[in-house]
Every structure is written in structure tokens, then in C-alpha cells.
Image (tube, rainbow, N blue to C red; front, side):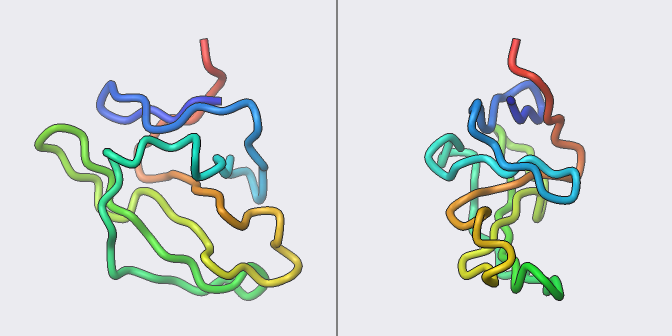
Length: 95
């Protein structure tokens, strides 16, 4: 799978984990140059507290477009050390 925004490949891996329709990429498959830390968090009742990154490509910023669970609850342990995308980021098969 590949995650793309503004023409830039953010992540690519054949080892994604799908949870609730979202592909979680291994952290080492994500280009760290496109991520900027964000203070945003949210809480999922069964996965735990999510933290967010802004996605930055050139001068364009997509606030909070990447998320991860630094300490997922036991039921969501498979997404530890993985990052997912939304807010206009296209995730689909790598070509």
C-alpha cells in the first residue's frame, strides 16, 4: 500500500494492518521528513489515546493528517508503532 498527498509518497509498505478500514503503516515505512509533531490528541474507547502529526509537503501543511497510538490498549496492540492517514491523503495499492 502507498499513502500519497500533494503528489508526494508519505509511506509505502506491504505490511500494513487494517483496523476500522484504515491502513496502519509500520513507522519505519513512513517518510519522517513529511511529518511534523502536533499537540492534537483524541481518545478511542477501545484503542486508547491517539497522537497526531501534521503532514508537510513543500509549503503545504495538512494539519493532523497522520495519527498513531503511542500506547494502544491491549485490544489494539497490533497498531503499536504504526501510523495511519486521513484528511485527503490517498491510500491505495502501490503501483
